[in-house]
Amino acid sequence: MKLCCVALLYVLFNIQQNTIHHSFITQVNMKNIIIIFSLFFIVLTANAQNNNIRLIIRGDDMGYTHAGNEALIECYKNGIEKSIEIIVPSPWFPEAVKMLEENPTVDVGIHLALTSEWDNVKWRPLTDCPSLKDKDGYFYPMVFPNKNYPNQSIKENAWKIADIEKEFRAQIEMALKKIPRISHISSHMGCTDLSKEVAALTQKLAKEYKINIDLAEYNVQYAPFDGPHTTAEEKINSFINMLNKLEAGKTYLFVEHPGFDNNELKAVHHIGYENVAADRQGVTDLFTSEKVKAAIKEKSIQLISYKDLLEK
View (cartoon, one colour):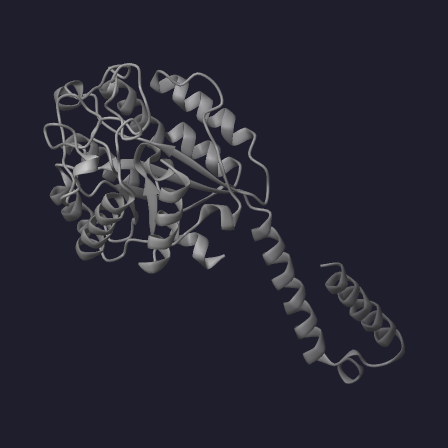
């Protein structure tokens, strides 16, 4: 940047001198001037882009309910959401596939899942993996021990890495079959952090299936709410507070779960998280808020998806 500025000043100085002593047209090499000005513009543009705040807005859990599917699409079409994570073994996966086909520009990730956490709606593994199933054949509700669900976490049972690999492969292959544009992998309820062995397996599979976007490699930082976030108003205010603290030249990730406050989601809950419908409606309100959109525009924050990281 400094070199380009010095070069530009040098050319301008010589133009001034040549204008005084000679004819400008005959003494100045116009081609060199154009090159210098072009380089200067390119460097300025690149520097401005590098100083942008970049923010990935990710919506999780597509497939868990019809209302969830609709809210996730709404937040993409009319809101700030840029990437959607889909749970392959979930009950509303077929509808989710159709919706994503109708919205071909949205970035999609596989939300690898080894749990079925809700009390009133359940899903099972795609494969025969006995160590990952409860007595009724469903996934366990929790990944890690939870006092509300004693002995019902994967961690507390005799899980096998071979079963996890088999199930992960099946979920990845089904997702790629139905949604070929899948760009990356993410983790439902932190299941890929079950152990170092599982984390390493996940990285291996992401590379093997060519859907490896490692956020750490791109220095992406997690950006949580900054303040209370129970109601929709609190979510909006705390999100804007978070935006105010983001630093120029850095890339951030914000993750939440859109939904609608309707009868379907009011029937979806587990012990310790009973207000799912109201909570996830608040996320939808946040993601589609005109106040939030205005704050993002005012701060010149660039909203990107996972796949946009590849174009860095």
